[in-house]
Figure 1: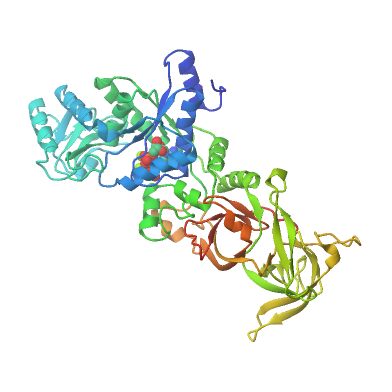
Figure 2: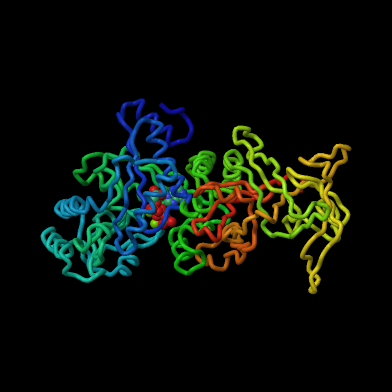
Length: 548
Ligand code: ATP
Ligand code: MG
Ligand code: MG
């Protein structure tokens, strides 16, 4: 049994169990397979599957595949993979609205026979205009009073494909003056000569969302049909149809606020255009708010589940700061990631008083808060790499890292001091000559002298060249405009650091294993990694870095 009172939907579920209205709770997650899932869907997935888990019920995965012009098998496959990856399982409860096409069709004839539906020959545009507005009632269609026999005959001819796309529709006969525009004779079926991923060319007419959804819920015995707030005004239609049809159960629709995130657009139309127009490199581009993108970026599913839990479920729309998601990602990765060293923009350092041709192994711990993670050996030698921006020839105020004459600590190794700056003909710094203090092995001076900075570094002898991809927000605007999103795109959303170096232990990471590169952030191997060229994605930067 669940804790009561966590959100209004769980309260309703608990009350329905207490009152014995339902013996078992049945929910569903009903994606349309017309794109990849995004983090907004994760909220709905966590809610529907979470309720089923917590209250001993079940949650169906149902593909709402009623629009063959936009739906593809690739999306069906990716949706299943993403729900599993998020940590949820539908067991044997995998359904497709298209499996109900025959039954839905039969019920449409039932509506016609009862005088509750008619075939309308008006064009889409005529129907839109005659529907009226919020302040103006709609106008009855000239075809509204067709006889049952004529409606049945026309509907059957629509079904067998006698008419072209758009020639006719089937509409519910409700009330063209209803205050709720959704009740002004909504469209139930439209003609579409299109090949469906599952039913092929069997159908020339397809049910509308409003007609298919509630009836699919009823067929599956869904008790709580949970959807986002835009559908609140559709609920009277949902109920009207359930009331008029001989459905096997009476589900109830509840609405919650969809997830909106700053610097992010969560509309499948926009995400599809980002992919098609090449603004990103596919649905799983790590800059995308898709589940596949977040996964490739290294975001752990536990962080997404924690994020969704923290934002809660409310009845009013709001925008969540993307910083909240980032917080959850850091929290999770800080606990689980092994520490490694990598230099993203390398600058060569030569330790002049270190013997040529020699090297030594030093101990580096794998996780500061988890002794069981153990330690590893790292190589120290005469030639090293440090980060370019850890050196300033003329240090700015409060710059305590390396500069001429200044001493710093190399993490796990020694104190070093810069003795000379080597430049090329163009005046660019190409190398630093330094000295080290052999008495500071491990990072402390026996004479007790202190340094202000500790820096990461690598031994040039065994550092591995790598490409590192650093991601910044896809949009520069905290509330990008879905209608003109291209203008809000961040031209610097991807930075490729083609000449990075990583310590050899980094190559031991398995697919999807995130590591903390000390002082830099969290990084994960990208699937484009090859034996010749390892590639890493930055999942997220560190909020704080030690002693910078
Ligand atoms: P879009 O509006 O971008 O096309 P959609 O809502 O049509 O997305 P569906 O595949 O129909 O996409 O969504 C499946 C389920 O996920 C629906 O129940 C929907 O309400 C829910 N959902 C979609 N977007 C969000 C979101 N941003 N926050 C919470 N739930 C969402
Ligand atoms: Mg939808
Ligand atoms: Mg949609």
